Image (cartoon, rainbow, N blue to C red; front, side):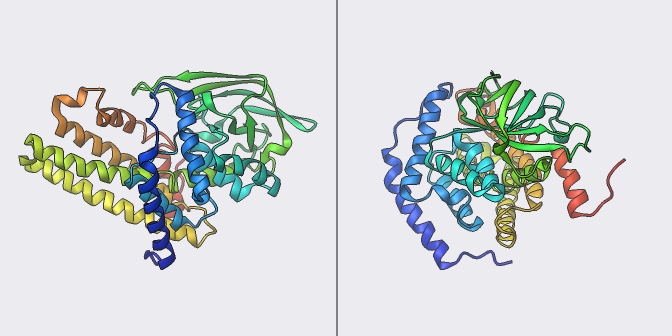
Length: 377
C-alpha cells in the first residue's frame, strides 16, 4: 500500500497549519476541569471555528488520510482536543455517516459539525463491560416507539450531552449478538437519570445512567432492528482505528519533553533510562507507521477502519502506560504532584487497557480474525 502523501494532501496540510497559526493565539483561556458547562461551551466554540473555516467535516466526509493529517497537525499545534464533542465527532457521527439513512444524516450530522450538539456513549453496563454482547438494557416495541429500561455505566459526557448512542436488546430470545439494536436517544427524554462518576484523576467525564421506561422513536434506530451488533462493530472500528491518532502524536511530544527533562535533572546519565526512552521512541514510531497503514487500508474499504485497529489499540494502550511509567521515573518524587499534567496523564493511562475494549478482548480479535486461530472453549 502507498503510504506517501499526494500533492493535494500536502497542500491541505500546509493550509491547515497556516490557519492554526493564525487562530490559536486568539482562543480564550480554557475553563476549569470541573466546570463541565464551561468545558462544553469551550469545546463547541472550537468546533464552530473549525466549521466556519471549512475543517469540520474531516472526521467523516474527508478521506482517512486527510483525517490523519488533520489530527496530526492539530495535535502538533497544541489545538484544543475535541473534548465534549468526542463521541459525536469520532464515534456516533462517523457511524451515522456510514450506516444512517439520508434523513438521519441530515438531522444529526450538521449539528455535530457545527458544534451545536453533544453526544454520549451508552454501551457498557455494570455486568456487561468487556462482554458487551451480554448487555441487558431492554427496548420493547410500542407502536412507533421503543420503551427502554435498564442501566449503563462509563457513559462518556452524559451530564452535558444532547444525544446518546445507545445499545439495547430488542429481541431477548435471539442469540445474544443478534438481538441488539443501535438507537439515538434524546437525553432530555423523561425517565433518564444521570449520576456522574469521579475517576482516579478526579475528573467526572463518565457517569452512570439509569433508564426507566424511556420512549425512543423507532425512526431513531440506525440500521435494522436486531442488526445493532454489526453497526456497533462499525462504531468500534472508528474508536479503535482513528480516534486515538491524535494521542499518538501527543505521546511522541511527551517523549521528547521527557528527554529534555531528564537532561535537565541529571536522570539522563542513567543508561537504563536512556535505553527505555529509546525503546519507547521506536515503539511510537512503529505505532505511527501502523496508523498510516490502517488509514491506507481504510482508503481501500470505503473509509471504515478495519480490524487492524485492534492491533493498534492493543499495543498503544500498553505503550502509553509504559510512557507515563517512564515519566514517573524521570520526575522522581515530583511524580506524586497532582498539579503536574504528567501525573494526571499517568493516572488516566491506567484506564487505556480497559477503555474501548480491554486488552484481553483485543487479543481475542487479533487471534481469531487476523491469525485465524480457533476460538477458546
